[in-house]
Image (cartoon, rainbow, N blue to C red):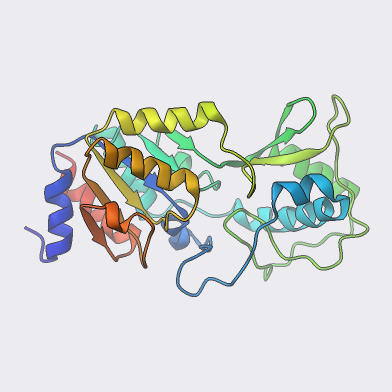
Length: 273
């Protein structure tokens, strides 16, 4: 029996159930990746898909910032929360993880079934022909085309790997080597829809589970709250772990206002046979 009554309640709710997991930016803060909406997060409006498509200078600004941020973003390592979820999957407690994050840390931690709702930063897609590229290859091209660009250690990164850059006019963006079309990191921008097949994979994880655990998400983005509503309609018990209010609190059987790393470690210790 744990000394924390709320944590014990979460254990009691999730015990002997197959638990689908939905994670957000809050699970990666202990890996040095900031949260959009958490306590102390700066006010910031990420670039919309319409801006990216419609304004060449906006594309330059995004790619310059994304390139600077990616150097530090890719250096982040999984934390104890990511590793706890991977251990629970390996033990058969959870069927997989649905994540709103684009950092790839669940995969690095050893999770095998991961549905990245909003894409991943390590791939780049051509918006004209759909050709996919490894982000490392595009980063190398950017370095070659923009030898002047620096990667200051003090650059301020965001959860999507973007960074703030002031002077972007001379920045040169690589284009698709197949058709010459514009390239975009394979992430879902604001104003873009989650690809239907990807969302369906997330729905299937929730459909096949007996409970839903939300970890580190305010559920402010539509894709996350839709999955919570799906679980509610199926009358699945929902446990939310997040510092601060979320849009799913009223739907939850239990809300823990707590950090994800320590909570997930404790849940893994209790739930893994």
